[in-house]
Image (cartoon, rainbow, N blue to C red; front, side, top):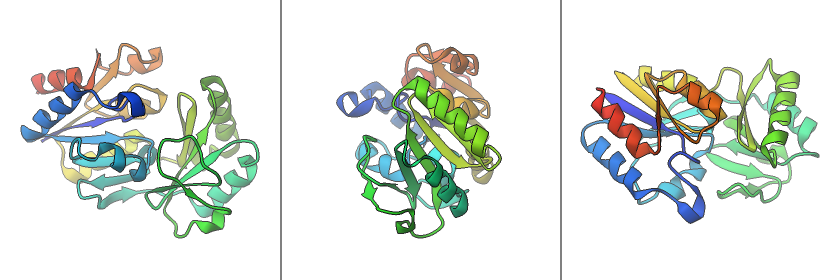
Length: 248
């Protein structure tokens, strides 16, 4: 059995105006019809994927919140690793007055006021409004790529012993130590007994995924460091699927 995990934003989805390339969707359906698995590997929570994907394709798996949670095609949890509540509280106290923080918990997105992140958000007044222990990821809008890099480095300096942080252009995702798209890929491959798994992504937070798949794809437009981690450079997910199937 073979599978391909795709990043979402900037890889298969290009915002509300441009959406998806029909050629990519057609290639994915053909890939699945041939008996293969296709899923998303993203920094978004489930609430940021479901409404956008509805009516497009049926995903075989979901790797969400930068690898903090893995779901099967029926959205049952196969694996999860949560941020400890005390770690979440400490990061919130440190940064909430200076930067905007979204909280990915319970497969939803919570915020203290409406953020520009393109998904439904539940507005809360206190961290205590989030019930349960399934806090998967904190999402920070760094406003621009340079500032996001500085915030990411500061988080690593202050909290790097208990969290990992990943930059995706102007956004930063903070997850429990040891979480990454790459670790989640390995978990999914082992749990499902996948023979060969490929991955495709376009940004810095995709590096752990590209380093842990059997065939890594990125784009000619990706940052140089991301291109260097790929086995193949392509123009589209459609191109990657053609190469991936031909090499099997």
